[in-house]
Length: 276
Image (cartoon, rainbow, N blue to C red; front, side):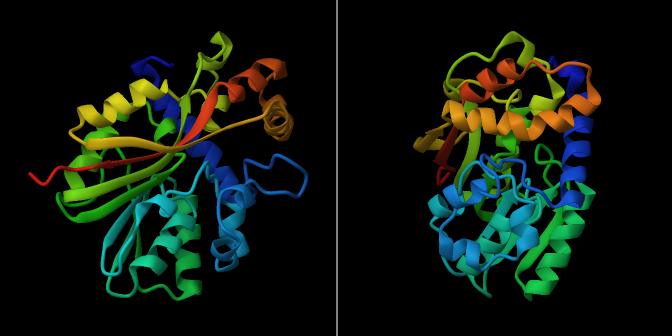
C-alpha cells in the first residue's frame, strides 16, 4: 500500500481518472466486448429503470441496495455516489417521504448525477460534494449508509468508517460492496496508481477491512456474499485498461496486472451502529 505521505497523490490520480470516465461515459469494468459488468451485479428490473448515461458511468463491484433492506421514509447516504446509480435505486425504495443523499469528490460525476436526477424527476435525491472521510453530513442523521466499490480507493479507511459511524443514527445500518484482498498483491502493484484508480491496489486484506469497521464501533459485522474473478475476467479487465495505461507509461506488465485482479474479491458487508 502507498505510504500515508502519498495520500494527496492517490486522491489526485483517482479524481483525474473518474473525471475522465464521467466525461467519456464508459464503464471501467467491461469483461467481454459489449457485455457490461452491470448485468452480473444488478437485476434486469433495476437496470431497466436507469438511464443509459447512468449505467455507462457506473463502476460497481456489487449491489449494496440489495442488502440495505431499505424502508419507505428512511434517509440513505451513498459514500462515493458517482453518477448516481445506487442513489437512484435507493430513492425508489425509500419513496417520496424518504431521502437519498450522495456524496462524491469529483465535480464531473456530481454534474452528471444532478442532471440525471433532474431528468428522472427525483425530488427526494440530493448530491453533495465532499470527501467520504470528512462527510458533509450531520451526526446521527442517516438511517442507512451504502457504498459501492469506493472505500478501497481511500487511503485513510479508518476515518471513513469513523465518519460513517458518526452520521448514522443509533441502530443504523452500514451496507457496502467493496473490493478486499484474499491474497497478497504483487509487489509492483502496490504502488501502481493506475491499478489503484481501478479499485485494485488500494484494497486491503479482508480481515483487516472488517477489523477497521469493528474498531469504528460497529457491531454484527458480517460478509454476506463474496465474488472473485476468473482468469478470463481478469485478463479482460487488463485488456480494457491496457491501451489507456500504455499511453502514460513505456511498459505495462500485463501479467502482473492480471495477478493483481485475481488477488481481490468483491465483498458485500453489513454492520450496525449500536442502540447506544
